[in-house]
Length: 311
Image 1 (cartoon, one colour):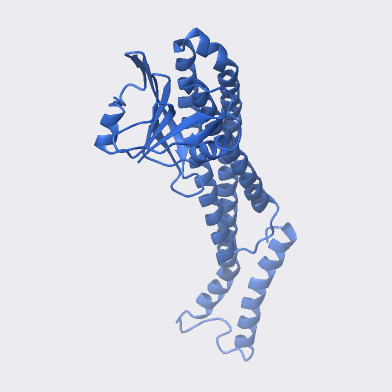
Image 2 (cartoon, helix red, strand yellow):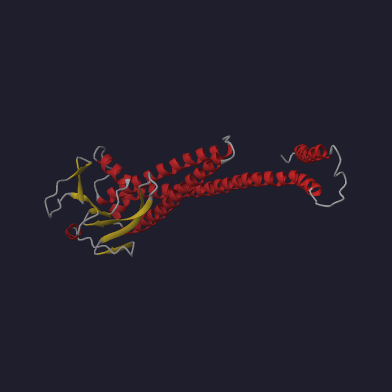
């Protein structure tokens, strides 16, 4: 699919394309899963192994942009940006929300500048704004999970196991999303670092403040993302620690139960020996005495453990 946009009356306007032609005033050429004919039409055979290079007065830049961030399939996909002949060409095989937001907003609000370079700066700003929303969303999600770990009162047993499993899954997905966000931020920062020195003097003066703003936002988001990764790791460690405590409590109950029933087993084993001469074998109250001894051997250790706070 190939879409073209022109700046008319200081706003982006989607243009109507005739088969095999690109409007002369098109400033942004957006290729989403292009066919071979569409690639040939815009002469954009791009070598993705080299992410940043200049060839024949054209700047070729490839960056990883986060897509499908609202699903469990979130990933950073490579998108290529080309500045050539006063036009911006984008080659992509995903539909990031940031591209939709930028094109819709650009068609309603006056753009800052009417050049391909200014469009690229605006598009990069939209991508960063989208990632800022993602980072804030993950931050809120982590705060909620933290409350569920440390403040919630949940019953032990199967429900607590399911509770911890859900928390670990949420933290894992949040950590994966933040990692992909960091990957995207690093690639965009590299793109801006490459772009600025290779622009013409006039274009650089026009877009440098905006690109510097994008670079500052990238660095701030990277720091925040790093903090969130550390917090996610802490919460994962805390969750695993609580799971270990719960398992230790279960093993402690089994251990105490074994200690409580051990004397009773010894008593029954003693009176169950098949010797011809056994003390109290013919005692009238022998059965009642053995039962009382067994019960006492269970109750006394139980009360002792309770008094020491082991139960």
